[in-house]
Length: 99
Length: 207
Image (cartoon, rainbow over all chains, first blue to last red):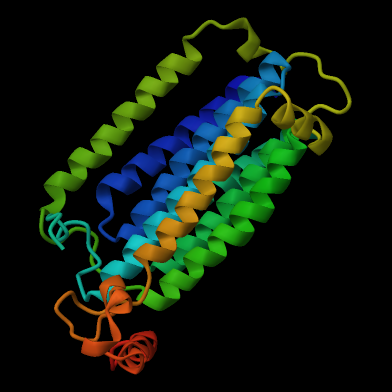
């Protein structure tokens, strides 16, 4: 399999994630779509690491996974805080920064 | 054989991705993302990235998705209509934008003319992508990135606990602040503070 196939899969997954971020209203699903985009980037990094035959791209992918885990922890904490304050779980209605 | 595994894994990953975005119930979205991650791990194995694939399954599909499932179960998956207020106009614009992005990526990938992309990949040694090699790289060449990642994880864990902690409203008299603890015993006893903290730990009624 040539590397181009992997990059095509990565591009399709990334664009699916972009569509999800732009169309969905539930912040949980928006976070899931962000995960899709990060995973697509991971796939591209690992594919290029394989193409060039060195492992630095894989190290980069692991660091991206760490950053994604941090983002999920903070994002889910925000959603739980929203739910505790009885705010609507909807990104269109949450348009003010003021608590 | 590799082609068959590739197309199967890619189909699973793409179906999971579409399901994550399309499914109404957030719980099903999370399950679709789990299948997407498993398909992606198979692709990582095909690309000789053993350790990344294992970390993907254990950390992502295991730990992070469990966090998602708990939060979805706590918040409750509301079945909201997809876009009632802004109407189909904004949704069409969003889909158009992601479609245009896909066309741009396709032009960039297929028209790049890079010779490495048409091959199966450069030669590799047997331990390519194994945990030992990853550990060696992390502790020698990428030590600074490794340490910064650990610091980032610590900050994110503390931030998540602070954000999601159980708290009452700002003007709620039961809220316990640091000033209460530092107050002298004349104008407030420690038992008051303890009672307040117990009530706060029990949470507001009804939730």
